[in-house]
Picture 1 (tube, one colour):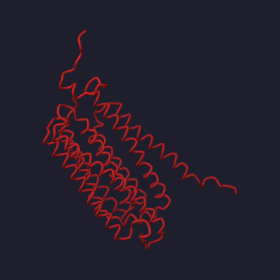
Picture 2 (cartoon, helix red, strand yellow; picture 1 turned 60 degrees about the horizontal axis):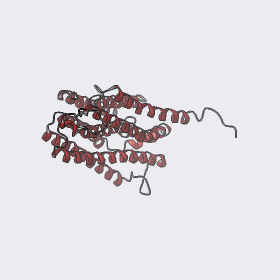
Picture 3 (cartoon, helix red, strand yellow; picture 1 turned 180 degrees about the horizontal axis):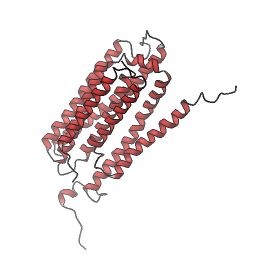
Picture 4 (cartoon, one colour; picture 1 turned 90 degrees about the horizontal axis):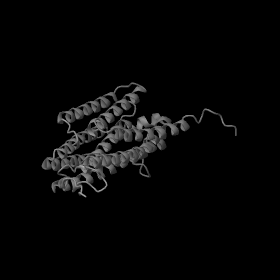
Length: 220
Length: 97
């Protein structure tokens, strides 16, 4: 009985349970999309509580939102959108098996992630100095201070959870860059890059909603 | 092998996203009443769709992936619609205490 084997170059890259590399890639992408669906619900709960309180205390939210720095928030949106462009190019470099370009693009994406986090930290520091962090330190001279504080609870919960995701993303990108520099993703085995890319783009999508909902409530 | 996308498409995608960012930012300085929120949300949803279609390769991927992506949104819709149907209808029926 002849022993069926796939070509040696591919068999090393395909796990036992898969017929071929295409099926392996489809399974990886499906798994990631299901994970992202659970992430949608994770953030969804916060977006939902935001929605309820925004409709209940609309005027307070408009006033409190004006205290956030729209220039820093807007710049950060642009930083993430450009980082997504670099990530898309990184996946493309992986598809074309261009190792050096892949490493550089992954590092570039991670660098922009660090720029985002730096701007975010400057912003958090500004909020802290202006007594906008909820808790005993919080000070509000306008109307309805307790609901103004509520807005900042939601602001810190949502941007904080997002910042954790960005930090995890930066870590993933750095590990991928290290593995890529060792040639781990050559020969069509770049699932990890593609999946990491999906995660990074998802984090970008979350910020795309956070920016207008937190910084641009009503008109300024 | 997977289809490799023309790099110009990625550049155009990013350019469109930055233009939409500028649009949503500029509109925040114009008083449109309740339409400020509607426009901001419409722009955000458009941006999210563009990212999903072109950067996340929903365009050109299998039906199964489309289904997985839409399923996430469907569950979110259930979460939001059931909760809001509670919160926004609480005052409709007077309670006799």
